[in-house]
Length: 602
Image (tube, rainbow, N blue to C red; front, top):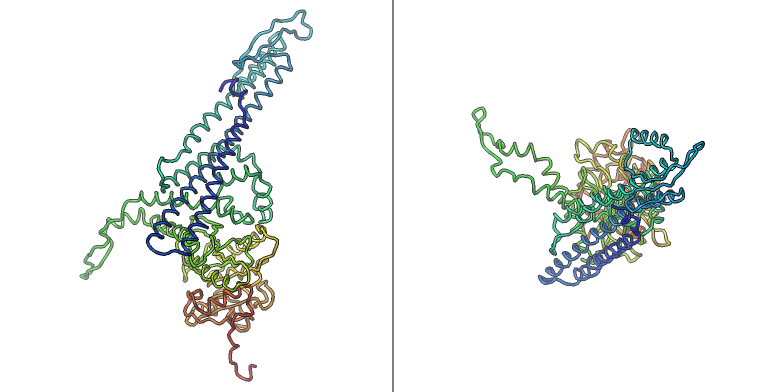
C-alpha cells in the first residue's frame, strides 16, 4: 500500500459498512426467530395434514437460510471492523511519523522518502547541504546499529533524524500492506453458494470462515474488553452489558463457543451463540462421517474351532472396525443428539410448547447440552433437571422430552410462566457397574450446576425473583446432593426421582427451606435399593440412608409409575405431582401416607 492510499484511508467508511452488515444480520436473525417461534409454531399448533407438513418443511428451510445469512453477515461485519482496526493502526503510525518529521523541519514526499534541510553539528564551521533519504521496513539490530553509525558520521545532524522518520513511514506502509494482503482473501472467502440450499458443506465452510476471520482478527478481538477469567455469573453478566453492540457482535461472530458457555449471559444471547456452534459442528461432523468408508457388508463368517462351528467377524470387518469403528460410533452418537435438539426446535408450538433456548452445547467427549423450554430469564417458575447414569449427547432426546412433559403440567397449573431446563452439563457415569458407584462424577459436576443456577439470577431480565426447582433422576440426584453439600444450592425446591442417595443423611442438609425436598420411588425401581447398599447413600447407624427412607425426612410423593425410567410418563400422578411442585403448588401434590409401623415403633 502506498503513502497516498494509506493517508486517504477512512476507517469510518469500513466501520459504517460493518454496521450495515450487522444490521442485515440482525434482520435475518429476527426473520429466523419470527418464522420459527411465531409462524411455524402457530401452524404446528393449529394445522394438520400433508399440506401443513410440507409448508412447515419449507418454512424451516427458509429459517435455516436466514440463520446462515445472519451468521455470515456477522462474520463480514467483524472482518470489516478487523480490517479497519488494522489499517487504522498503521495509519496512526504513519500520521505520527509525518507530523514528527514536519515538526523537525523535514519534508515527507509522496514516495515515502524524507527530505531534510541543511544543517551543521555543534562546533562545525558551515552548514552541510540537505538531502533525501528512503527508509526500510523491519530493521534488525544489525541494520539499526549500522544506521546509527552512519548518522553519527554524517556531518548533517538532520540526516539521522530523517532516516528514523523514513524508517517509521516504511514500517507503517509495510504494516498496512500486510493487513491488506491478510484480509483480502478472508473477505473474498465470505461468499455463499449461488443457490437457496444451506447444506452441511455450507455450515462446515462457515466454521472455516470463522476460523479464518478469527485468525486474521486476533489483534482486533484482543483489543476488545475480554471476558473475566473464571468469572462468576454476575461478573460475566456485567462484562456483557458493558460491551458496545459492535463488540458484542464481534464476540458472537468469532467466539460463539465462548459466549454460549458463559453462565450469567442472557438466554437469547447464549441461544444465538450455541445455535451457530450446533450448525457448524453438525456440518463438520456429518462431512467427516460421510468421508469414512462404508462398513463391509460381510460382517460375519463361520470357522471350525475344536470341531465346533463358531461365528466370528470377518477380517475385512475387523480391519474397518479397528481403524474407524470408535470414531464412527462417536460421530453417529453426536449427530443423533444434534438431530434431537433440532427436533425440539421444530416442535415449538406443538401442544402449546414454547420456544426453545439452547443454553449450552458441545459435542466433545460424551457431549454437553442445556435446553430450555421457555425463556428462563422471564419465567416465574424455573426447573433445572439433571439426568443420571448413561446420559450423553446421543440420548439427550429422551431427557428433553421429560422436561417438555413437566412444562405442560406446570404451565397448566395456571400459576405464572414456566421454563423447564434439561441440564446435561457434566460427565455422567456411562456404565452402571463400572462407573456409577463412584462419587467423583457428581462431585466434579456439582460446581458447574451451582454456577448455572447462579447464572439464572444474573441473567434475569424482569424485576422479580423466580421460584426455582432442582430435579434429579438416578445419579443426577447424587449430583444435586453434592451441589447442596459443596455450596449454595440456589433453588427453592428439590425433586428426587429414583435416587440411590444424595451424599447427605437428612433433607434439612439439602440447602432448601424445611419441607421443600420431594422424593419419588416407583414400584420395581431397583436403583434406590442399590443406594441402600452404599451407592450415594449416607451411613446411619450401620445402614445407608437414601431419600426414600422415612428418616431422611423428604416428602414422599405419590408415584404410580413402574420401574426406573417412567417418572415423567404422561397422564400419571408421578408427573402431575412433579409439575405441581415446579409450579409452586407443592401443597397440592399428593403425598404417600407414612408407613404402617408396629405400635412399639410409633
